[in-house]
Every structure is written in structure tokens, then in C-alpha cells.
Image (cartoon, rainbow, N blue to C red; front, side, top):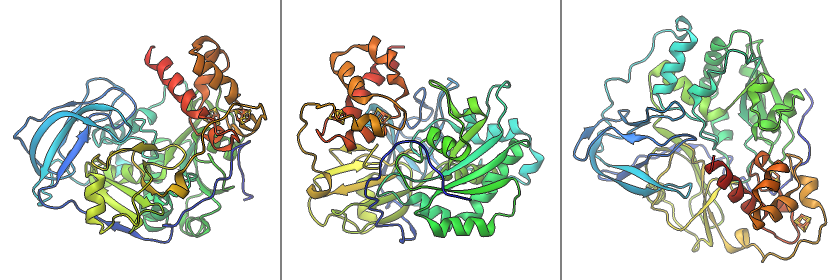
Length: 438
Ligand code: SF4
Ligand code: SF4
């Protein structure tokens, strides 16, 4: 099938220097203190259900919320709860966190039991398993998977996507799991198709991963599943853009993919669903790309959630080739800059970028000279220079009138602006202020 794409967008340098490096498992050392922030998802924060001094097992639920829009949190190691206090999440927010000292035994909680035959379970039973496993959108959005998989009855789902575009520069975890966990992904997709018997599925992969496309074309025997190759372009992996590229359907302003009959799941989320449904395994692990010119040992690492990035670097034998000019958790376009490595890997973490000055230096902002480049490249068809103006003025009314809430914070506008204006940053802050006030 011909390569396909969406309108506008940008072509930043790919810099995927770790794409050929197999995933290495890294375990936290004896006595390492794991940190579990209570916000690792979109929705209401969790509350701890353990107390200081409790002994916990790996895979034991340690936090939950009574609110529907939330996702439970498990310990990823066995050990002792040492503290419960305010901590810093890699998303830059302060929230309550549970601190657990690793006993190095990895004793699993007795609730972890394989399930015999998922085809004998109905959708509600599978949704309960996925909810109790604490699975959220692992591509970075963090939307609780059990809610996404339970659309309102009037929304008929005809297409399930495995989103494996991985359009952010530097990131290579999706590429590696596509190659190394192919069977798990296809089984995870089979579970989703069992839950939506009238739907077909699309595995969407950018054309910079021809080995992954070839492998899925070879191993996929399911007639309901199509492998589609997408043009390598940013932000190809955004939900609306992947839906448009593959089906031509446009998600309406303020809407969701399910409004056009689509469910989009990141490839790592599908593996987590397979692990929960087949092996009874809650979400405890994450594959992280450690990269950047200042990283001395770049690679793709499977780590336990809650491990700090400083412990990850130490355990992987990594460090700095030179003092990083900027540290980012996530990709260079949508990630969050950090001032410390003593923050934990959480469900929505995808990468640790250790960037040199040459990679990260941004010239000072200048006045807008109305060249229109930000408009030409915005994948949402917005007018970033105007939204930036309304955001800087605090004019929420006009910001809303010109669809500021449709911004997906892809940062194409900031990237392309020859005046180096902080367009996406100001639009993001205004958008959050409006959403928080609702
Ligand atoms: S790209 Fe920058 S300089 Fe050009 S119109 Fe947009 S904000 Fe102004
Ligand atoms: S950050 Fe928002 S305004 Fe800027 S290009 Fe992306 S969607 Fe458009």
C-alpha cells in the first residue's frame, strides 16, 4: 500500500542513533528507593492505600482513586514502604509520592496469575483486567486504557489502530519493541479485535522502519489486520494525524478518534494489555531510550517503573560524555526539560535525552515579522502567531474563539519559526489555564 500522511507538519532531523541497539533489561540495585508519583495518567490523582512501614510485593496495588477517570498504581519491586510525601514528577508537577526500598527479591504478589483463555472472556471482563492492571496510553498521553476501550454505546468502533509511527526524533523504543516483541503485539491486537468483533485493525508504522514493516507483513496472518506505511513526518504519531493519514477521516474540533469510529493505541500499550490479559501482569515496566550526544552509553532499556533516572544511568553503566546542556524526559519536541535526574520513570516516560549545547541551544526570541511559516506547518490548521498573541495578552475569549484548545502541543510552530518565538509554550500554558479553570 502506498505511503500515506497528513496535511502540513515538519521534517526535523531524525537523530535516531539507538535504533539498532536491542533492548537491555536493567534492574534497580538492592536498597534502591523507588518513587511512585500519584499522577502518572490523565485524570484524577491516586491516593496511597499502603502505609509507611508496610511490606509490599512486586505487582501489588499501592494506590487508587474512587474517581472513574484515573488509573491504579502498583509497586514494581518487593520491599518496604519508607515514606509517603510530596515529590516531583517528570511532567514537572508536584504531587504525593510513595517511596519503596527495593529488597532485591522481586517477590511477586499472589494476585499475579495467568488467565487461561481470553477468548472465553467478554469485553466487560477484559476491561476489568485492564483497569486493575493500571494500563494507560504509554505513548505519552496517559489516558486510562479501560476508559478508551469502553466507548459510549452510540459510538460504533470500526477501526482499531496500533500506533507505531514513533515520529519524535531520537526515540527508538517503539521501533525496538516492533522488532523484538512482534508476537506479543499481534496477540494484544487479537485481544482488542476479540473485544470489538465488528472492527478491523491497522498497524501504522513510519517508513523509516522498513524492517518492522517487513516483519509485520510477514507474520500477520489475520485478514482483519492491515499494515500501513506512513510517510516519515512529524507529528505523524498524533492520534488525529494517524487517523487522517490512514482513513482520510477528520476527527472534529473538540472531538476524539472514537467520534469517527476509531480507537488508537500506542504499540507499547498493546503489549501491556497482552501482558495483563494473558499473564495477569500489571503495568510495572517501561522501555526507555537513553540518548543524545552527551550520553556516554546510549541505548534502549527496559526498566521498572519508579526507578530514578540517576539509578537507571548508573545501572546501565552510562553517564555523560560532557556535562549535558539540557536534560529532557521525552522527545525533543514534546518532552519536558529537567533540572535533576533524581526523578522517577513513570508510565508515560519514553526517553531520557542528554543534549549538548550544539543540540539544544535555542537563539533568543525576536519579534514576529508575519512570515506565516507557523500557519503553513501547523498540523491542526491553527494560526499560532495569533494564539501566541492572545496567550501573551491573557485573552482567553479570543484564544477559545480561534480554537486554541485544538492545539496538540506538537511544537511544529516553535520549531519552524525563524524568529525563534516560544509559540507552543505560550499556547500550552494558556490552554492549561483554561482547562484547569473548568
Ligand atoms: S513563524 Fe514566527 S515570525 Fe513567522 S508568522 Fe509565525 S510567529 Fe511570526
Ligand atoms: S503546537 Fe499547537 S499551534 Fe503550534 S503547530 Fe502544534 S498544534 Fe499548531
